[in-house]
Length: 75
Image 1: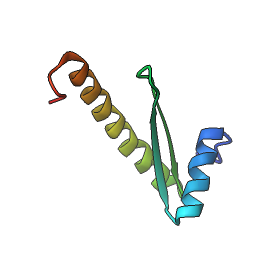
Image 2: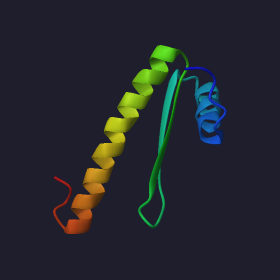
Image 3: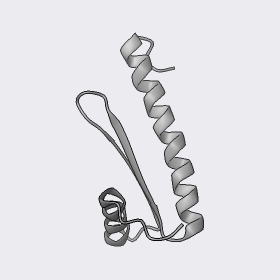
């Protein structure tokens, strides 16, 4: 896993630098319910952990949104 040139990962990298963080997870949601995620870890190991944490958070948010849409409150 080397340098990722993706603009979204670059945004994560910038936030990590500005906020003094070693990991950043960004989950975005638009008004049509589409979600996206970008993650960054300062090292290869932190990158793997950030991706795993992001995946769990992403899945939880999707489940919550689906529950709200169905009127169950997400849980």
